[in-house]
Amino acid sequence: MKKLLIANRGEIAVRIIRAAKELGIPTVAVCSEADRESLHARMADEVVEIGPASAAKSYLLVEAVLDAARASGADAIHPGYGFLSERASFAQAVVEAGMIWVGPDAASISVMGDKAEAIRAARRAGVPTIPGSDGPVVDVEEALRVAEKAGYPVAVKAAAGGGGKGIRIVESADMMREQLPIAQAEARAAFGNGDVYIERMVLGAKHIEVQVFGDGVNYVHLGERECSVQRRRQKLIEETPAPLLPSDVRDAMCSASVGLAEAVGYRGAGTVEFLYEPQRNEFYFIEMNTRIQVEHPITEAVTGIDLVLEQLLVASGKPMSFTQKDVQSRGHAIEVRLNAENPDMQFMPSPGLLETFTMPSGPFVRTDSGFIAGDTVPPFYDSLLAKIIVWGRNRDEAIARMVRSLRELEVSGVVTTAAFLERVINTPEFRSGEYDTVFLETWQATA
Image (cartoon, rainbow, N blue to C red; front, side, top):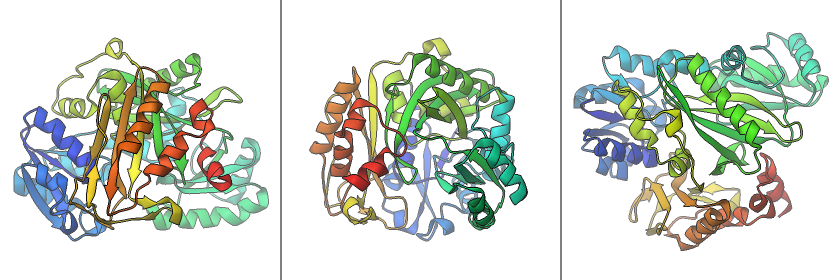
C-alpha cells in the first residue's frame, strides 16, 4: 500500500488518516465543496474535490471517487462507515480498477448486506436467529403464515435496509394485509429492492454486538459492546463489556460471531449484531455490519488493539498481528455520540460556526472529531460533532469519568446534546445497567 484514499469525511476520515500516518502511508482526502476547508481535508497529504455539497453528488458518486484515486495515484481506498462502505459494487469496482479495497471482499458484503441472505448464512453457520421467514416473503398469504407461526407482534423489514430504516411493526393479521404492500413499496423506493422479510418482535431486548476480525485464514472476536441506548434505532451511547450479560451468553455470542465470520471467509473488521432477550436468556442474530463501526474506540480502549491500523495491515496482505489468546479485555469503556442537535426541539440539527469547541481531556479520555474551533458544521450531512470515549478500571469509574468529561466540554455557536447525554447517564436505568432498546424513548415520554 503506497498511497491511501479515504472515501469519507468527518471524524472517521480523520481517524483513518491518523492510522495511515503511523504506518507511513501518504493519504488522499476527497471532499465536497462544503468540506473544502474541513479538518479531514486539511490533515490529508492531498485533497481532491469531487462535487457539490450534496452527498448524492459527491461522496456517493462511485466514479468521482475512483477518478480521484486515479488522478492522485492512490493504490488503496478505505471507505470508513456510511456512504459507500457497504456497497458491494463499489468494493468490486475498486478491485477491478487495480486498487486495494480496505475491507471484506464484495461477496461477503453482498451476502451480509442482504438481510434475508444474511439470516440464511447465519442459520447455516449454526447461529441462533429470530423466529420468522427463511427469506423474503412473496405475498400476503405467505406473510400471514409466517407471522402466525412466529407470533405477533412481528417486524416487517426491508431486505436491503439497515441502520434502523425500512422497518414496520405489525400486530395482527388485518394489519399485515394492510402494511405488507406498503412496506414492499417503501423498500423498493428507498433501497431499489422491494424484498421484505418477517421476524418476531423481541420484547425487552438488549442490542449487543460483537467485534470480529479476520484475515481470510484466522478469525477472532474482540468482545462485545452494549448498544441499547437508542433513539429511533440510532445508537447514542455504547459501552463494553455489556453490563448484566451472563458470562455463558457472552461466550456463546462471541463464539457464534467468529463462526459466522469464518463461514463467509471474512477479511478485516466487522460487527455481528444480536438481540438478547433477558426473560428467555436467549440471543438472536440480526445482522452483520461489514465495515468499521462508529463505536469501535471502546473496543480499542479495553483491548489496546488499533482496529483501523489492523484493517490497513490486513488489506496490504499481512496476517493479523494478534491471535485470540492475545485479546485480553481490561476495565470498562463508554462512548457517547455528541451531536449538533437541539434535544428541546425534537433533536433538530444545529449547523453553524463553532465559535468555541474545547473537548474534554485528562487521563483515559479520548475524543474523535472532524472539527476544531472556527470550523463550520455544515447542514448537509450527519450531525455528529464528536465521539467522547472514556476508560475506567470498572464501570462506576468509567461513568464518573464520562460525566466529568461532558461537564468539561465547552461548545458555543451550535446547540449540542451534551446535557441530554448526561441526563441519560444519570438515570437509574443506565446506572444499574438494566436498560433495553426502548428505554430511552420510554424515559423521554415520561421525563
